[in-house]
Image 1 (cartoon, helix red, strand yellow):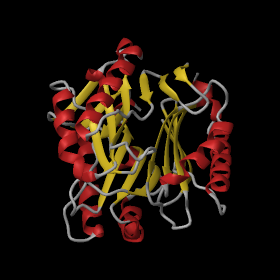
Image 2: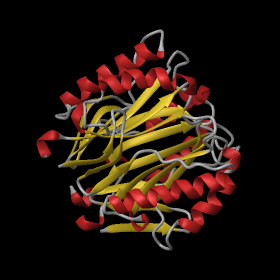
Image 3: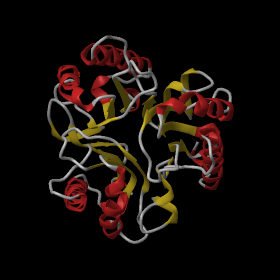
Image 4: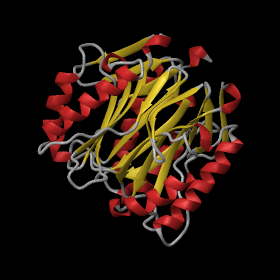
Length: 116
Length: 116
Length: 116
């Protein structure tokens, strides 16, 4: 009843259970928070499609910014990416991340389309 | 199968799926953490009722404090608000928030009563 | 439909709903992040078993480190603890915790075995 995809000793990138999919915290490469957010959300797209979901079906997003002053720049990319009428519940706070060059990390919980 | 309420380009205040409701991170106005927590929890109450849930049905609460030294003052308001016997799983950590005047933000996941 | 275990005025250690169990943020005693992580994960084990789940069935783990420089030391304990092939979705960020001696806190969401 639990399906795990891309599983290492530390984490799975995708975990599916009971119609819900949990992604591991996603980050992106890039010199700016905008670039990192764009790549991060591209990875979210790919993982959600692999999980049988999509950006239309996100339930909750928790956004961590290494520097909360990046809030506006992150949001410009985020707002453009979210499908009209399908925005998830979201929270955003500041947290230093696992690598010092990382500016943003996003934790996604979504619904699996095939169970809808 | 996903119901979204109060949806903007950035987020939905309420997202319902599979008997569970996710609220966007709630904050409150006020000069003190106690005042902000009180208003924040009032907003949680209103959103949960709108979602067909209530403070009796909270599953998980993640509390972010801009200053962890506000832990005790936040808890005094929190403990008085939680219905006897209905306390959720909770975690509390420090995170600077989207606006510099914000002292507390609470992320709520709850059960929908009508599916119980 | 909601089952709460070890419930105080502030929080429940275990909340079960709809095949999913939410644990309150777990911490551990000890002088090092390794010692605290070990004890924290021991408490997770005990609570999951009490909830009718186990470390094989974790869906999502959110790890807060008071000092992100403890990332490697925490991971050594974490990686050894996670059962082969059963790693959850995970995210790790820095957050100061409720007591100044706390170095790590882990928020667990898991599946209940008996409903699988």
